[in-house]
Length: 395
Image 1 (tube, rainbow, N blue to C red):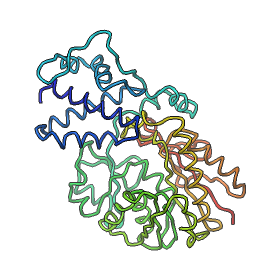
Image 2 (cartoon, helix red, strand yellow):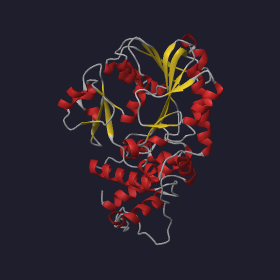
Image 3 (cartoon, helix red, strand yellow):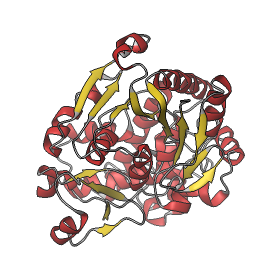
Image 4 (cartoon, rainbow, N blue to C red):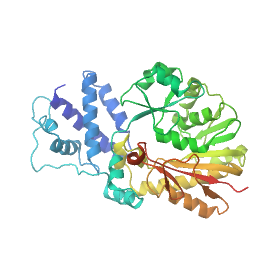
């Protein structure tokens, strides 16, 4: 592909991504994969170059652009090399006119910037939310040690805080490595490792991962349990939960029971666990504002109305989870969001409904104390953004 053809491909992909963000369609990564699946003529260098153009254009646009071309024209205004590809030659885009629409720059739509500012994030912290994310893995302590993995993977570097974390160069094909295939490592951001460790899982306990998804934190908890005890992994998403058993088998985890829940019937489907769990982890559905580095187009998907729906879901899972905790047990509430509306405000609302519960400092202490919990953000901690709180049930 010529440089102009690559730019035109990026424009076409951006059109699809903008439309999908507005309609709730597929994520950018999925759309890019589909695009090139039908264009076998594009080599690996072409695919990489187009992908980089697409994400550069997404990151520099705050609100959703009017079109893919508007996003690329805005990028061309900042990058002379991109501007040169708008020459109309071959399959390249037509020349740029001075008065044609440009995507608006910024961190996010104005209402979201206001919400982030109100949540205590300064300009530096907000800007870091759309930087490129690092690639982290967690060493599986059931099978090996971090030191042993470092001997086999000398290009890896220990993460700053997570005791089992390693950081690799972006683009490292982790899932093609012998270490991954042998179950010695799992891809997991350092921040995710830190908040997952807040459950302080111990061997022999009865624990619940209520919103397990594909099981990243579930596997982490099972390793902390040393494969001793019982760990119930639940979700309402069949496709995501079905990814957990093969991952557990590869990691050598044997203590996990998976349970698919029907929305609206969770309490009755978990009746056998009512009041029995030593600890419950709730990695609640949220806006994902803390993961914009990985999914920058998510800024265009969030609306005030969707945020309201997400907060209702968070209330719902907090009520379900609290009913599973035994007297004196603990509930860990996590969101990969930096909005107080989904973090400390949700914990405050829960405590107002359950005055006999208490909020405790997260142990081991992580990130920065914030409201009724702790917060991690990309600028300050070099991780994805998270809020985590520890809630204690009455004895």
